[in-house]
Amino acid sequence: MSIKLFLIFTLFVLGAVVPGYGQDRGQNNSVLPRPEGDEPQPKTVREMLSKLQVEQAKKEHDAMLDRGSEALKLSEEILKSYTATGTLTHEDRNKLQGIEKLAKKIRGALGGEDMDDDRADGGGVEKSAPLDVAEVIKRLPDLAGKLVNELKKTTRFSVSAAAVQSSNAVISAVRFIRGGK
Image (cartoon, rainbow, N blue to C red; front, top):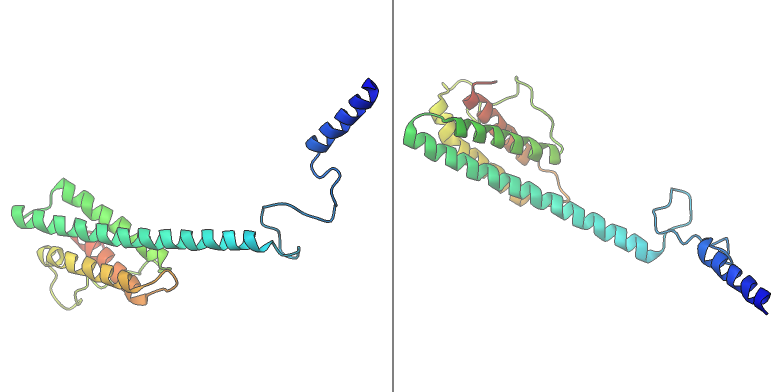
């Protein structure tokens, strides 16, 4: 009697330890995505992956909108500080660097490329117009506001050339203010 119990117990343990023991080998119960060419995933897994992709795209779009709002806030703070002191403080220069990073992330998320110096528009001001740092600082919140408005017009399914141009204008203005190209 004890040998029979031992054999039954052993078969039970082997069935629990060895995956797929005693199951039809034609079934693949894997939850992982299958490579192309395999049989299609169950509908519920496909739906789950699709929902995760939609949620990720929405998060990325929301993050892009938040970056635009942050750039606008920083540009308004710089203008306020510059108006009060007549000069850029070290903190203002750090904020300018932050605005440039935010605008580059936005441009990258939209699929835009780094602008050439020939195409740079001098902070949204005509090249023939004399450029003054104070004028460009005053225009920076307008440029950032235009960028935010363009971003609000986009969806997570679209790419806006106007938003890419606006981000390039913000980057160009920041570079001009910082003394770069």
